[in-house]
Image (tube, rainbow, N blue to C red; front, top):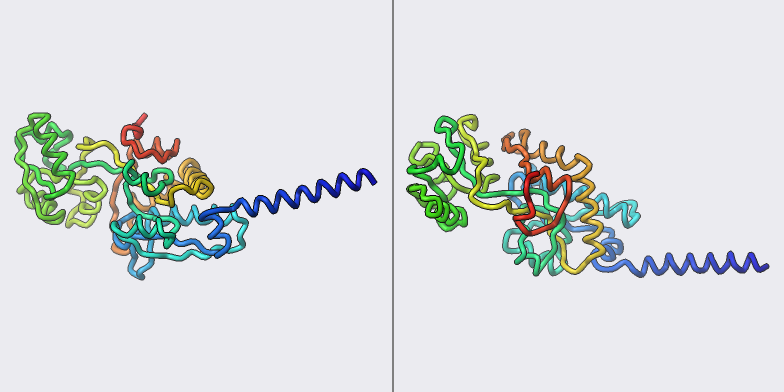
Length: 305
């Protein structure tokens, strides 16, 4: 009888514990469990991170990562199925729509910085961009110092032209800086030899090269005018349980080698809808980041080994 009583008490304790675990589900995980759905925010033209293909379906590097996170959430919550809802966002709406609960994850090319972390959270970094320059291979401009005394273009009103101006003064380069009205005009100046180089975010330069008449004519510098800027998938702030699941999911993707496969798919191969190849090899810094995932907003924390 005593043994039965002990077993009964143990069973009751187990029931209480399982009930407690169910009650402990809070925040985003709780709402996903109760609704059976998760909402992903996507961009319509952030190639190759998150954009619409020719059938108006959101695709991209960040979208693939988000779908991997969805699978991990489904497993964590022991759901037979989990509906994925898709909601478009822009640079101005992405943070408000995340904060007010319209979307649960923002899958795009959002820079993780200390200022934004006051409002929302980021999971592990999935890309590092920097301010570099595109040039014609024939001009052999392998370093920033090779730009001395030459004409260089950048887009007016950007941080990139500010960085170029500062480097010009600091290094005494004697560069003639031309401000272009937009990225297309700036690239055209290099194309037509009115400038030897165009300074801009490297991934944007890669997309301009891929869409040019002859991509084989151009190269993007290794030298950069800025420190690495981390891109991360956004989620709501002050939801540690949800962040723990998302962080574990992204870390598993990056450290398993799946992250490298996804990178190759979107940055080194032809992508829909036009079959462009951005031909952007993974940086040494991002390789290190994938090996040891981090959600740091500090550019100085991203260094090649």
